[in-house]
Length: 376
Image (cartoon, rainbow, N blue to C red; front, top):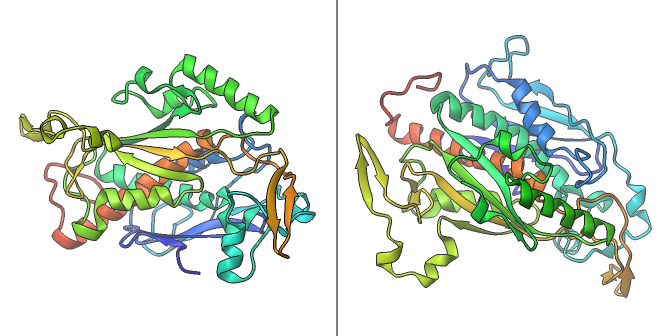
């Protein structure tokens, strides 16, 4: 099945279905020698796992990583060969879907898979389930360690900026927010008053059998200039592909984004300025990427996530036998995907940047003087 691999020089292939025996990934292209902090990989996966708060699905999964290849298991050093990582599914309940598996759930991938393949894994949505993102988070945590080995000041931070009517954008300083601050609330909104309102809204939607969408904000600080390829593989294009490949992500904007439509060139342009020996721009409406190449300013973008497609109220739908029917969905689902989407967004960012870094080194060498590390 094409479409299961992301990246060129740094490649990750995910595998597994939501209710199959296991999910995981194979990572290829890792430079050898780096000692992988496996505990940090597990910490990132713990941030994504289900059952972590009353705001998420109650599905109970330990999500413990098993490292099958590519590492010296005693020292943790990356060998340079493919890294295979496995997470076993322990709490799948396929029976929840059995009585209506022939019905196409509104706003799900059910009909699309049938139209494409002539069959589908109806238990939990198979590959279209967010359970697939386990492999992305594992690979993204590996990619982030590779990036930080080369660029120690690089920081990838995402957070929930908005859920439904609660918008915290004006209350959060994007230049100083940290993952620690983000994780202080189960909503992953780093503004206490907004986090409280978001939690109340999510729980109210859950009680009513409904769901909510919102916006995740992402900032990458310490990203060097020069990453990204011109024309088809522009860095913002690759990041947009990475983000839009996530379940429920329906839109991405960089920097000022759609506000550019109401601006003039004089109002929108980012003006270059030297800060000592470092090139900067006086504003960052471009979101740290110009001409598809990073310019050294923070990468800044927003991702829109739709409300969770599974709601627990009856809805009109259709089945695979040609009938229009009513569907009363069951099962365990997040009433809002945004809190658990945060580490997944960070993972996809790291995958795109690590791939861009290794492509850059392969094409023109290492153009960043004055930095040392395992990848120097």
